[in-house]
Length: 199
Image (cartoon, rainbow, N blue to C red; front, side, top):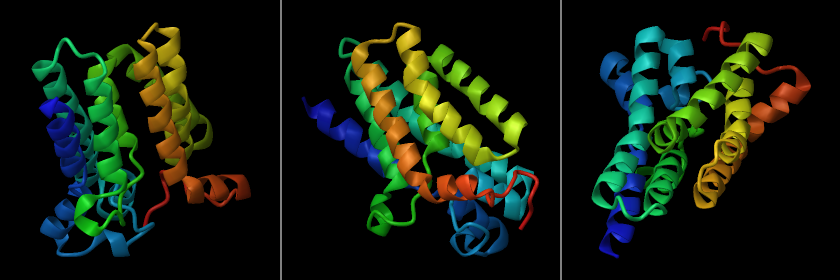
């Protein structure tokens, strides 16, 4: 029972670490929250500060989802429900960080992907296919992110994952869509920037 308290809480606290903001501050002494879209995620870091910092942000944000889920599977292998819940809490930490009063978080795509990678690599792989296809067609990361999020529970169901895991994937997708409200509005208006747009 204690793991049901400690692991989700630890995942939320780990997820709350804004690696994008920390990397940019360390490298440039500037605040990514005041640059570009103001988001702490890899896409904004890449647009403003280049591939290296963008890739590092992506990897660290994904690790925030992968590490606590892997720990949950290691510590409680007989409990199939704990690891998905831990992954969800890592995502919530990234989107609603504890260290800034639930404000200033990211959009959660990389952290959700990290959790899904450990829970079901094949489901994540198929969802990444949807991301790549949408990115190729429209050139917009947000469209790819939304496509991948929508496909995560769908592919989880098609690949026969437990219902509870599919349910958690659906909640993750909903969180990602909520965090992309502004992007969705710009996509509908045709004003969403492409990946190639800089600064």
